[in-house]
Amino acid sequence: MERLEKINNDFATLFREGQRLLQEGCGDVMNRHREEAFQRFKALGGIPYKTEDYLYADTLPVFDRDYKVVLKYIKQEVEVGEVFKCHVPNLDTNLILTINGWFVQENATPEIPEGVVICSMAEASVKYKELFEKHYNQYTKPADTDGLVALNTAFAQDGVFVYVPDRVVMERPLQIVNLMRANADLMAFQRNMVILGRDAKATILVCDHTLSDDCFLLNNATEVVVGENSAFEYYHVQNQHIEASQINSVFVSQKRNSRYDANVISLYGGFIRNNLFAALTEEGCESNLYGMYLSDKKQQVDNFTFIDHIAPHCTSNQHFKGVLDDAALANFAGRIIVRPDAQKTEAYQANNNLLLTDTAQVNTKPQLVIDADDVKCSHGASVGQIDEEAMFYLRSRGIGEAEARMMMMFGFAHEIVGRVKLAPLREEIDSLVDKRLRGELTKCHNCVMHCKK
Image (tube, rainbow, N blue to C red; front, side, top):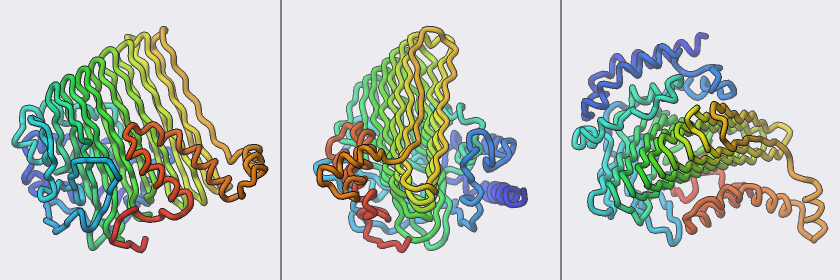
């Protein structure tokens, strides 16, 4: 296909001509993976097109734009408190900022416990080389058939690095605000790493936003290690304008008796693809993965999950819900694998969708692969419209049709939001969801840039 070939050739030219800039400022650990990753990208056919895992996700329109790719950090004068107010009342966080995939040193002033490291990926690859090398690019193997993850490894130069040592508890959540801003259409690559030692605990809130009207594409990959007896909470609020697209890949490796809780809330964006992987590598792990997506117009949200039960006596839960209006499209593919040695596994998966129009579409594909015989596993999916009997009940109580619809949609979505453990954050997301369902939140919330899109 001519368009696909041109996109892949453009990446090949960019990689070949940008070698020096790609390696500048990054440690040997990052740089030595680049060539192999790009060769894998080429061997896989480049941008995924009608492959099994991207069967309903048409990536060609997303990549077929005249994007600029910045291979060298350009300092931008940004005072985060002035241009962005991601304020959740009563939620005290350590705030750090990235712009176009680059860690911003000027705004990185978190109050953190002794021994905790929060810095840029480029800095960590040099300053903490032994720790970095032990974990970098070690947990992306389940996505070896995804050319977009390989592309990230080949091109990513910076991002956020977080290390929480053994027996350290981060009481204040870390809030990472990923901003996209440019004066031209821009493609960016970001790589992140989170490492929790034994008996550690941390909570991270990620917020994605745009600060200009341009078309954006962010390819973002994050590797997470949750150490023995540790607990990690991960919240991701995706709220960009309709010409912004993102591929968000998260790879989690869990050690003995660890717990991982994740909640991905997709409020707005043109094309969103979430690749969410969790490997339960040792006994006693618990992994809880939740997601909610609200889409209208011609937005597209894809959620691809992969839970790998490798060890016995582990539990996983997945529940994703979506509300779709207009001609929006959502795709869900959830895969659970139970390995032969993973006896006493409990694994549950559900995907529920509410369609508000005849033109909204959902493709859902829950999957179970079980190679052990002593397990409790279930999976299911539903696609439907608002229950007319429930509507009649509310109307008969004197509630107007519009408000009754709102109540039902909000109740449907709140089941996922209610999983957020941080009460102030849960209340704020509830407020954002309410605004989104009422059509009051059609742009990045709390941004003062007033983008037209």
